[in-house]
Every structure is written in structure tokens, then in C-alpha cells.
Length: 164
Image 1: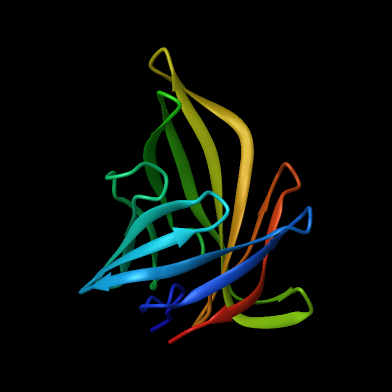
Image 2 (image 1 turned 45 degrees about the vertical axis):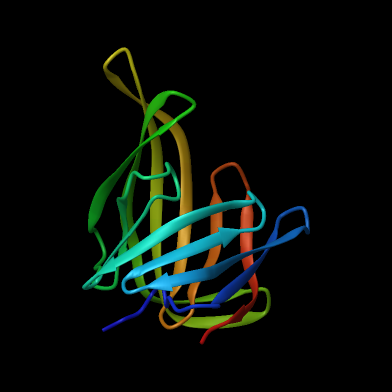
């Protein structure tokens, strides 16, 4: 079985953004199947939980655990992540676009990569409104998130990682 998000105490991933600045995501605490993550760019903590192959997180809204990833995904799978942001009901419609691909990131080639695309939508007056904004997440088996891109041209590329 794949492990697209290897979680253990002190695991750390460092990313370079499009503007050249870097930040890290680090597992700062672990208790059973709960892992506290610290994101240095946002200066925030979030919790990631594993339950079998399902990975949930409250990274988008504190205390609101939503399905983020599973280690048993196939092309075409989809699910919805629901959260509030700036007082608005938001949704990410997650769809697996590619599996078992190779992806070059910052000169390093990762194999067994999964690509998930998220479409952002918000609720306005009880109507679901597409924002025409898409984010692509590339997860490499045994490594974690190696690249994030968006329809706005943003990118967050893995430059270094340490797994325990």
C-alpha cells in the first residue's frame, strides 16, 4: 500500500515558493494517530489524523476535521472538503487526476506520484458558486507532498525533506 503522507515526529518538508522564499511543514507532536503540524509560512499549527488509510486534517479550519487524502486512491476518485473561511462556507471538490506518474521537482524526479486537483467553490445565498480557481497537489509515495501548483500560477516545490 502507498504512503503518500508519511507522518512521524520531527518529519519535516521544506518548500520553495514561486517568489523564491522558503517555508517548512514539520511534525512537532505525535500521539497515537494524531500529529501536530507547524507551518512556518503561516505560523500556524494544525492537526492531521490517520485512521487506517484515511488522512483527515483541520488545516483549513481549526477543529473541523475533513478528509484530505487516502493511501488507496485511483484515477477519477473524488470527495468534498467543507470549511469556513472569512465567514463563508467554502468547498474544495477534490479529484484524483493522475496516479503512478513521475514528476520532476527542483531537479529531482519522484516516482509513484499521485496528482489531486481541488476546485474551489463558495456558498453565496444558498447557491454554490464556482470560483474558477484550481489547485494541483502532487504527492509522492514514501515522501509526501512534493509540489503544489494553482491556476493563478502559484507554486510550492519541495526542496528538502527529512523523514524519521
